[in-house]
Length: 223
Ligand code: GAR
Image 1 (cartoon, helix red, strand yellow):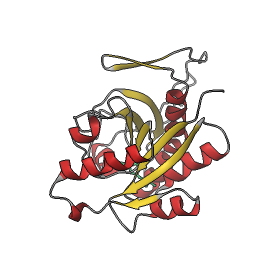
Image 2 (image 1 turned 45 degrees about the vertical axis):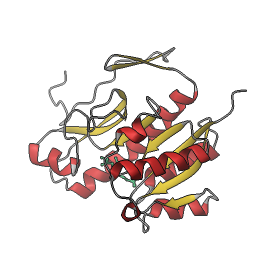
Image 3 (image 1 turned 30 degrees about the horizontal axis):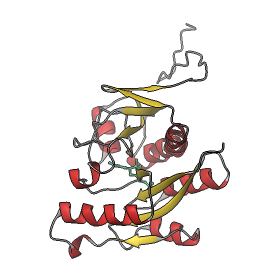
């Protein structure tokens, strides 16, 4: 591809496994992108350590240094601009973002969420899924707008919920899929293949796909 790489700015609060998956996908050239800056609201976020280990600028942006969420997001935008970021990736970023960030990056912010949205938005998605008793859960990458977890959906992956699952076991099963769909979503954007049409995101020139169904528990009657 002759196009320059898509310049990513990753915002993360926690363990940073999705950031790692992105960095890995970039360095193995599975995606035509590069992480230019990692910003975290939490100084102890492992995402900052992963970034430093990969020689990526890692910035702790301390919420206490700003008078409110708007001012905080303005500071984030300044940093993203300094690093000439094309696409903002929320990878386990646990702060609500405001129009001060969404405005300048309209349709250029994506988020990964650990449920099949619109089910179980917000915090503790796995706890919500287990309490509800769903048999299939999963993860979603979506564009970020002013709503919480309701922006247009780019890609989803489903996993079974098994009897005896805990938040931890379900998290591990879902996370494996997060690490696949987030880099894939970034690559769709790098290839400029997404068209937003109302709530629907249409993938241009998709590969032909067989009708694969995910059913849980298993069908045992030979159908
Ligand atoms: C991931 O499961 C991600 O989907 C979730 O936080 C985790 C971060 O893991 N995000 C949200 O719940 C956002 N509402 P990571 O730090 O290892 O990538």
